[in-house]
Length: 411
Image 1 (tube, rainbow, N blue to C red):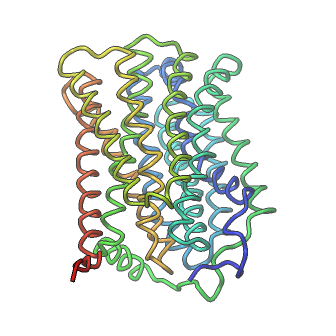
Image 2 (image 1 turned 45 degrees about the vertical axis):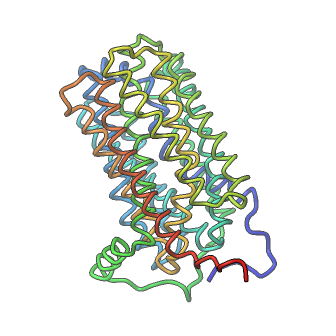
């Protein structure tokens, strides 16, 4: 049952903006410092690949934190975990600002992710608390508009701060953004989970519920599809700085424009999704997005195998891979959470953990494969997308099986 007053509007724009800012905090923490990786490596006396290891550390924190916040929020509500997580993010950002060694940076980034991921879980759960599946798909698309600005603006801000303040200023700005989110939550975010809908869960019950969710094909299949297809973004993010700056020789400032161009495609498709979802349906749009991503990944793999990867051709293939997430992310989430009821918080957490877990594995695989970075990236993307597309085909097959047979025509 949806927790909103009768005859009320599904959601206000202010509510969506607040949820979007909370959701964007995690991606902002990744994208803003990407142009600074070579400079950070120089200051910390390591190579760029070692500093890039802070990305898998961050993804691990994102995955683990969501598994914790999900059951906690189902028990005590959505608002208090936001206070805790955002406060932890603030402390970790402060440590990142003053980090003088790679080890301190890696640990601080882990705890920064552990705090920052609370916004992703609470935003998805709050939407599920109040909205139907179709309304949720539209709301998730609106979230993509708000958080989609992060990959466009964040590298530009990071590049500017790198010139004006050095890389330490990037973490200062993240700290200020986090404090702004805390104020918005305190004054403008109303609790969406009533006391009577909360669940008192022990650790054993939490683990049992996660196991039940993974056994439930209504959740498992779309969650796997969304997690695998979304993880391609993290493979791209993990490789982007080294690929564009070190390999193609792009400056930190131009890197921001390249990164923003792909993010712009994601925003356009997410908004198109919001307009088309009632006409074409959630599952059909998920299939279209997955097919787009498949084309882009296979194109990149062919380029890498043929030795014809250039900045322009790589940008073309990556545009399809990244933009397709604008269709796959919102629709996979809406399908996965639609039937979860009181398990919405834990289902949201598990879905996010799967996505960031696959992203972590993708980031590690990039540097474990014994190939050039462009080939390794395309191989990882193809494996993720083909597996995710298979899950989408399973969903479509189940939908067709569930459809009532067409009555015979004629006399």
